[in-house]
Image (tube, rainbow, N blue to C red; front, side):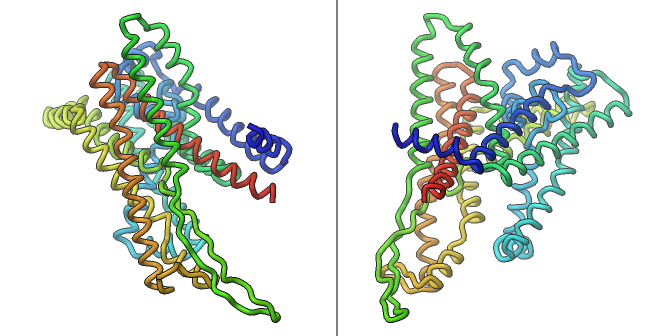
Length: 423
């Protein structure tokens, strides 16, 4: 407790840290304000009836940071930017130029890479915005405003998506943690009071075992995420002896802590984004005038409504994205080069290529643990849902994964900044 109070005191007194925390809270306030401004022509009553119990739009609402439930000007949220980032990062496998830009051109290359992600966000936002607006207009939730009104709404929605992307990048640059994840986090946290009140108002004594089961599942999720987020694999290193000015330095043994979950919560966000895309297309086809498109939309929708298919696909996507995101964010070659330049080596491993291969092998092994863990956790809510019949917990489980993962990552970054101030 004393350690916590000491860190809190440093956080409050240090102007740099205090300013960054207040900046993040200010961005949260701006985003929540924007999420309450609806686009023109929305029928609020019809919207609430449509969203009630709709699992697909519930998941989509998570990625909008809660803005979709109001059909606000930022209703697409971070979804287009996340989809664009996934596409560009996948293209690094196929394009040597993009791979070289991301891994070998330093900070300038990363800025160029991020710029490409921003540019591709615009057409993706246009496609997603047009699909959603067309679907909601067909459902009678948005009034038929004609061509001019529809184009105006589409421009508003695209602008809102770009504005949300910009707010997320401001958090990443001037705050702490991943701005995109924090925007999603803010929307989830804002919806917690209403979700709790709904559970309280609908409670009956016969549901007590169900509520206890939900509580146990939540505790397991939270404890598991925290444990994996904090777990490390020490990589032993020895610094070679060298003489300078008549004195001998080095010869000490140390270790490099490798996080078990290097990818963080991003594989879960990526996995859900991929799952949402075909369902969004299917929902658009279901209200099309063409009978063939309607049939295709119904087939795809039925496939993704199958609990087993959804769970297995979710598992595979999160598992693969954990390896993929770890591969693009952690570079064994760079670490091996830094060790060699610093006069350090891993006991029993030659410097250079052998060190790079050894570090890669260790990272692959620990990533297997985090990949299995992250892939299994999202399925737990589905299992609880099947056992209890409460469909809303599937959304709650995904929200818990994101919230706990983001908080854990944010605390680690704050601890690192506080430790720097202490020294």
